[in-house]
Length: 630
Ligand code: MG
Ligand code: MG
Image (cartoon, rainbow, N blue to C red; front, top):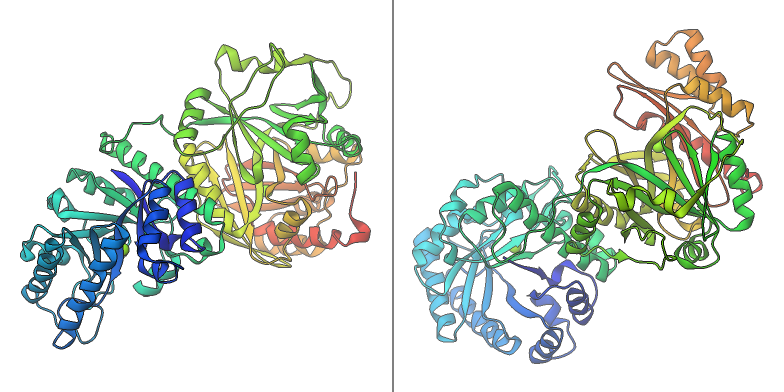
């Protein structure tokens, strides 16, 4: 199966769209007629651009309200089709996509519709062209792919075939079994879209909320597995109408689109046990076994502050890099890398983003295979010169241009701390504060970017995504979605907001782009950790009294238990028998980064009920005169 994309998916002029499509390594494109009409040139000039970019046009679309019309509209429809065929000849494509009629004037009747399509097919064939018929979910008479197939079957003409569009099929919940019995050579085009499940009319749902496969909730994989059973080996083409994509960067949306199709075909192959026709298999989604380290880029001024903060939290310096101004700080299973280099990746990241998290390293079972999968998915690999004898850890670009390193248990990579670092014995904070591991990493990004990173994590790693949650911030609504492994070895919270006033958005403007806003560290005794923090003078976020009064009513905790939480500024949540405890530090450095300390007892969530309280408390602290500094 070849991958393709319709120009309607992207924002910009036709020229910009085609450039972006070619840059995203597509070879096939559907031309949406409106893009051609607004193009400042003839179809032949558009064709020249398409060919120069190494693209081929698989179809011109859409041709609407054609079949089943009374006269004189019927004759006019054929005259319109003739003009489309002229345009297609100039554009260099042989397939016209016909959507089922939505006009109230159209008359039903399968044989009547089939006769019109047959005649259209005959006219197309005389010019060496073909037509493909699609059931719109809101078509007046034909809105089910099985009925469209019956029309095509009865048209009985080699130049008349079927379009299967996953949105139209899945939105109506149509049984997929009948797909398997359609002969593959009668399927002329397959269009792909996913969507969130929404209770609204098909037309509005389709025009505004379609998204790339894997970003929504429709069973696109079931559709693909049924399609594969036919032996279909033609194009699978994205046809997405989405307001967010129109607001996003043309180039990155095109790459996301291609990534989503590659991932979709891989999922299909994994389910059916057969690779997609004409495509090389790729390594499976990588299992993430934990977070090896988080790397911060710091200038000298911030480094001192940051080190004080880390000592307060119970970390100690455990290693010094052999050739760079880089230190390793450790507590329990948590490693933080502090990078103060004056050149290289971390430094340039610092220039653009300030003191911030510039890299994450994930433990995977096989780092080279993870990188190979990433490359197959069009993720961007990253290489940096290392000193002789030091280890070049495989990496790709992540959120905001940061890096994600892959570390595995192979003898080469497992020893990278020992090879690159000189171990140091340090007295500072050696007793620790009971931190045992990373719990979750929270990334803030533009609202438009959320689907990008959701797809990035889901396609590369063996993780699942939670439904979107709206969190109330004093400045507006923040959307939050989690990607995580089944065992919690990796939990990443993605936050995006359309309001410029939310803390999440202010973080973006202060650190100049998307990135890690907070890291949650796990303890097994939150009260013991709180005691160490207090002893060390770590400024924690003060939680208002009212919260605890409400907690008493909400949870039925005893007065003593509530008092202990209150004294330590601990937030509390419950999920069935599960319990969750959270402490937030005040911001470290100017950028708005902070740590969270959590304790979980059979609890899988992230304290969403407490998020508005925390956000309000942080917002109060953000008044310019009182920006807290360590
Ligand atoms: Mg379609
Ligand atoms: Mg959190």
